[in-house]
Image (cartoon, rainbow, N blue to C red; front, side, top):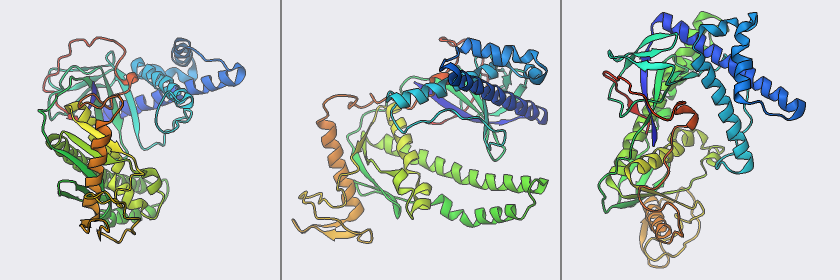
Amino acid sequence: MYLRYSFRLEPTPGQRIALARTFGCARVVYNDALAVRKAAYQADRSKIAMGVLAKRVITDAKKTPERAWLAEVSVDALQSSLRDLDAAYANFFGSVSGKRPGRRIGLPVFKSKKDSRQAVRFSRNGFRLRDNGRLNLAKIGDVRVRWSRELPSAPSSVTVVKDASGRYFASFVVDVGPETLPPVDAEVGIDLGLTRYAVLSNGQVIDNPRFLRRAERRLAKAQQALCRKAKGSKNRAKARLKVARAHARVADARKDWCHQNTSRLVRDNQAVYLEDLAVSGLARTRLAKSVHDAAWGMFRRVLEEKAARYGRHVGIVSRWLPSSQTCSVCWVVDGKKPLHVRTWRCEGCGTEHDRDLNASRVILAAGQAERLNAPGGPVSPGTEIPCQARPVERGTHPKAQPVTTGSQAGIPVL
């Protein structure tokens, strides 16, 4: 499977200028190619081949006065931009035809130089890792990397990202084998909520960290300072960076907390069962800010990816399961209950239940039943398909060339 390893970069002022130039050229090539494809489709509904498109917007464009500056950056980064456009069209057509699962994907749109996030990808021809641990990028130079652990294998591509807070990252795609954990007997059901983030069927409770709520005062002050600056001024640009850095601290803390808790759940349990929550619908209610702060979608995605990598099972039960209405002892459906009711007594057997703990036990039983009675498919531990890096990001060559990694290190996204 292909995994991502992300690292902080520390480019010099000159390298920052070169990276900004590369971001801009890749964006221009992407927009030019998109305009050409749209014009061809509107003219006679034809599709231009990648080779012809690359020759028109890169090779021939360099010979014109308007695009002569494209020669100042690596051609590998420009070709990767065209592959991104081709993948965007493939995703759109796959979504329209039903071949691609998930939410409907729209047509590719033009990129703006005002976007807060800029990224460019280099394939195996455009980068190399030096013996001293530096990352050499074509026509940019050796960039210092903050390594924290070794890469498991030679990377097939690297994506250089500049986020809204001005930080630079290098995201490597590497091919790794599965790391199956020793089997355990424990299985757990999880009921996600807002008052308590998660209540486990074994009685454990994970408190809601509320990262955004705790940082609201600091964020409000930074946003207030931004609003008081004149538009277009240098002070406004500095204030915008302060706001972006404040939001980045919140996002980083949430992501780190999510990875730590999902790792513990995957390590301690052979199977984990969750309810299929309608997060997008809940995010349109009066609880929208709390729902977004909880990041249930990210929690589920990371849990599924870790389970697929380490040989565990994650089961998702139907959102229409009346988990808060069903008694986990006698299985009598006791009717709907308002949210302020946190404990209730079953009319069938008289057992007094904690609302969330009972729901987690019902989810556990329902998930085990679905897994036992599954008519086929990836129901055995370790057979789920992990969330892999996109094929367009895995490089252009099928076999990896030997790469000297030096003191490489990184933090896996999974």
